[in-house]
Length: 190
Image 1 (cartoon, rainbow, N blue to C red):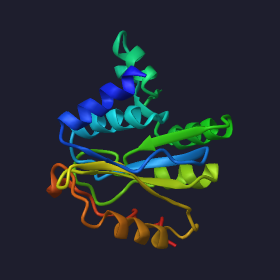
Image 2 (spheres, rainbow, N blue to C red; image 1 turned 120 degrees about the vertical axis):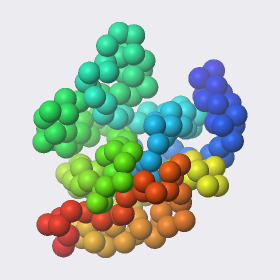
Image 3 (cartoon, helix red, strand yellow; image 1 turned 60 degrees about the horizontal axis):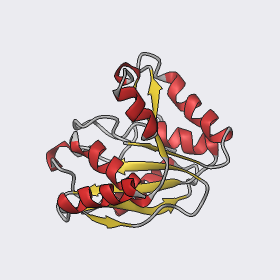
């Protein structure tokens, strides 16, 4: 197929080394961190095309105009009205429940700017759908991109985030000063 070859060429031209491969299980939430640059989306899409995995993702509904909307849908984009954020988690869980094979990707920071911590959406989606979390990453320091191990959630957010902190230690985003700490807001801890 030509698209995976083009994607691999783009990654190679960008100096990236691909690490890992598509999960062998049928369903997972795949997070991508640290998310500090607009380029993360481009490189993440190139990686998913290169390894041949159909990862769905939410994008602002306002960008789904023709012809961009057609391209986004082809790459796995699902329109999301950000004015109704409470529906996003439920919409993702329903997509998992209605599919035999489904991967859903998102950046746990929710933005490219430094925040007080990660948003809980990925965790709530994985718990609600009963699926593991694939630890995807952009390591600009070593120019590595990939999906690491799958994390089966324990129901103890503190313990699960400890595993994430250990895994992402030493992985550096494009703008390290924008990297958010791997913590949830108060009230989500066990």
